[in-house]
Image (cartoon, rainbow over all chains, first blue to last red):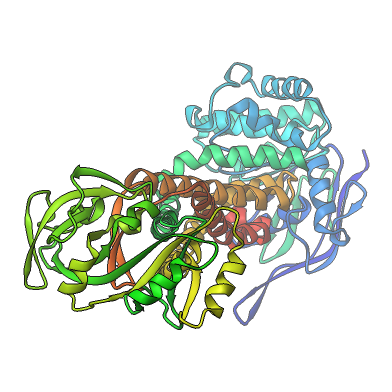
Length: 234
Length: 387
């Protein structure tokens, strides 16, 4: 099990009007391949910002971020897009499915960026839907599915290109307790059985309990590492 | 990249139906611009066509040197006789052209019409002119033959009715169809009677002449210029009517493009607004696609294609509306050259429809560009957060 994510002295500032606001301050982090990490903290603590940096959606103001051997802070936007398509699966709080596409086509989306044929794309999307237990819902549009089912489709979309990293931003934040448990169960299964590395932002301690270890953030800093197996906070 | 672009554009277009209200603003706005511009250009085209169709390639006007129109010109009977003897000139018709006051049928208000005093040779010169109702006027009598458009435009020109012109009652004895719309807006009468009524004894306004078959127009023209008993220029009918139509159509076309520009500005603002709204509605979608690894280009293309297709729909709608409502519609306008009414048909030609579609697509492209660039420049994180 090697290191998948390394953040070194990462800072992120946002400019609001004339003011520069430091959202992340000197964050050092190491996440091992194949681990399930929860990131907790109060609102505004910087956990989603850190997740966005790890997922290559944003760039740090300073510091180094290396994921799966690529220095994300030193590549251009085009290379970063290609890397995201190849290496990261995203799960969002509000699912972010495209309403005009059915579940099958939503899951196929990331595969449009690969060289796979149409039949291969269909086959892989069908397999991903099967993994999340929605093989029979491929023809349904998001509006015809429950919140839990939509999140399962979103997880299938995150899985379908077999990325090394899944980043989940409050994946159960919009779900009731029992549905949230089902989703968390699914994420645990993906981690355990498929060996996926998962970094999940959550407010919910019960959700965090499903992870192998939990990192806490406060005011832009990583402040503790609970059950620190495979994760180090410098 | 091509596959990305096709897929994202297709998805976007499928979502247009869920944004029917805002999308229809672009369609209706651009349809309005196209309808107005094409409608005005169709008017201009109709006027040009009406005047052009009056001309015959071998027919010329012989006009007093320096005059620009028939009303203000004059030639003596002696000059017309000299003209008849010029080598290369065939049939000659001296014609007195004056304006008469008539009542406009549509408004009931006074209007001006062209009255043309002619001899029998005028009919020989215009073999396509046919009497379609009643009979021709008889020489020496106060009788009128009204063009078909004149009888539609002015009251009191029905066959058998009498109309007061120059303090005398004239009987309308027939209607003619000249197949050329400028003449169709005129009333014709016997030349000597007209000369007496309008106190132009022995004088005509212009002479029309047919060149002999095979004669060299330039040579004939030069002979007339060199003839000391004639102070006149030769103008081909097509050039004469082209000059007459230029003043009118130039004004209409300038007006068309001016109004089109003002309305187009409004349509562009509406398009920009609608497309910004479209981008805003889709920002989470755009952010998600870019998070998944899609690049900016398909996003820009999808927004532009949406704007262009909506504009195309507007262009087709506007063109269809103006074609259905106006093509072939008969109207009349003041001919600046003779200060008389000239009837014309709106002509919505394929060329004008293409101009309309081109304008629509230009407006769509301008309206879509800024929102497309904004969509492309929006940071992924900001786009995702905007939901």
